[in-house]
Amino acid sequence: MNAHDEERMKQLLRKAMPPVGEAEPARDLWPAMLRRLDAKADAPPWFDWALLGGLVVFAAFFPASIPVFLYYL
Image (cartoon, rainbow, N blue to C red; front, side, top):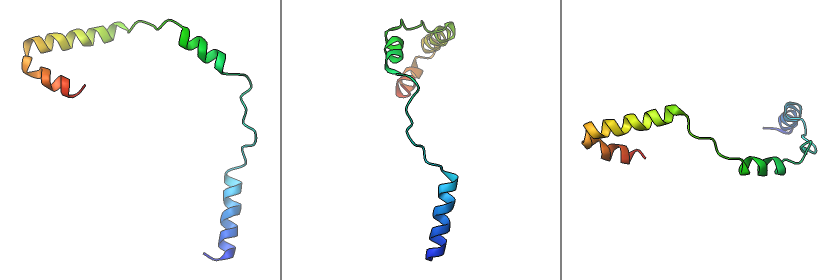
């Protein structure tokens, strides 16, 4: 690349990615994060319990599958 190509590349990059400047959030996010961490966790949905029950039933009928399940954990 010669100097002319380098200068053109710099111009194209500057045009494609304008400077960000001071990217400060409009408000403080930490109190909201603390409230979210302190909130009670929701219970898992019923579908998760159904999948777990199906896995237990499957393992009861096919005990040789238990090492396979443990491998993929």
